[in-house]
Length: 458
Image 1: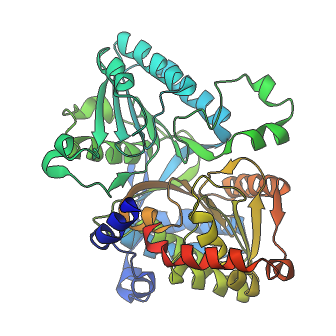
Image 2: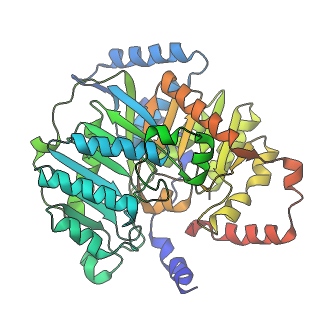
Image 3: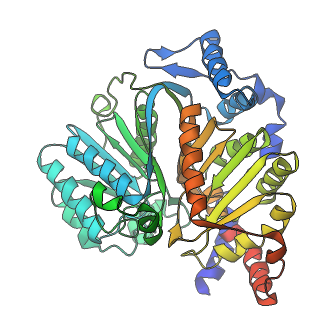
C-alpha cells in the first residue's frame, strides 16, 4: 500500500501520454520527405519514392505506406534503412540460441542492454559465455535496469566485473548509489544486444529462465512445439544484420554514456556496414523526456490500416486514443485481432485490460487469450506490410515512463511471417465470445473497475 501511495504521488512528474491525434492533424508533419538510407548513404527523394512504390506494388492491397511514412519520419527522426536481413525469432530457446551464437562469433565487442538479468541458470550461462569472450579480448559492456534486476544478487554482477566486463546499473533504486541522477520511476525496459556493431538482437525477451530452462537443442525443442511453447513464457524477437545496426548501436551508446559508462572509441563500435539483405527497417527508441514515438506511430498505422491489424501485447492498459483507433478501424471493416495473456504475472494489469473488452467487442474487435504460462510478446502487423517487434507494451509505463525500443520492418515477406506466427499463436488461444463475456460475475466487474481507475500507474 505504501508503494501504491508513493506511486500516486510521484506519477504526475514522470512523463505524459502524447496527444497522438493533435500530432496526426498537424499537416506540417506530412510535408516531410521520408528519408531512406542505404549502405552507400542517403538516397534522393526520387530514389526513396521508387523503393516505397515497388513495395506498395508487392503489397497490392493498401496504400498505408504513402499516408503513414512521412508522418512516422517527421516525429521519429529515424531514417528508413535498406539492405538489411531480418530473422524472426520465436520464444526463448530460439532467441537464446541466436544470442549465444552471436556471442561465440564476436571478435571485437558485445553491447548488452536488458531490463531483467536474472542470476538463475540461463543468467549464469550468459555470464559464463560473456566472461569467456572477455577473456579472449572481446570487450563486453552491459546495461541492466536497477529495478528490473533488483532481485539479482550484486555478487552475480561483481563476478562479471572482476573478469573485466564493464557494467552500469540504469537508474539505481538506491538514491545513494544514483546520486543526483536518482529517478526511481524512469526505467530502461529495452532488450538489445549488438555484436561487433554489425548484428543486433532485440525484442521483448529478458535474460531469465522463465523463457527457457537452458539453451536446449533444436531437435528436443521440435519434439512437440505446441506443448513446449505453453510451458515457458511466449516472446518474440528479431535478429538484424545490415546498415541499420548502427541505429541500434547509437541508442545503446547514448544510454551507456548517459548512465556514466566509460567512453567508447567510435571506430570500434561503428564499423562500415554492407548490405546483408533486402529488408527496409526503421529503429524507434523512446525516452520519457520526449513523447513516445513508438506509441504515436502505432496509432497512426492503425488509423491508416485498410485490411487487417494483428496485435500481440503482454500488458494492455490503454488510453482513450488507442481504444478509439482500434474501435474505429474495426467499425470501418478492418479485421482487428488482439492477442493478450490468459494468465499474467501482474495482478492489476489483467483486470485493467479486461475492463475494456466489452467496448472493443461491441465495435467488432476480435479478442483472444493465450492459454499458455505467460504471453510476453509485443508485436503488431498491419495490412501485411508494416510490422513492429519490440519491448514496448500498450500500458502507461511503456508510453510515458520507460526507455523502449521497437523495430519497424516494411516488407511483404516479413509481414507474411509475422501473420503466420500470429495465426499459430491463435491456435493456442481462446477467442472471447461477446455474449458469454457479458455473463461474467459482479465481483469480476468490480475488480475491473478498480484496476481501470489505476491505469495511469500501470
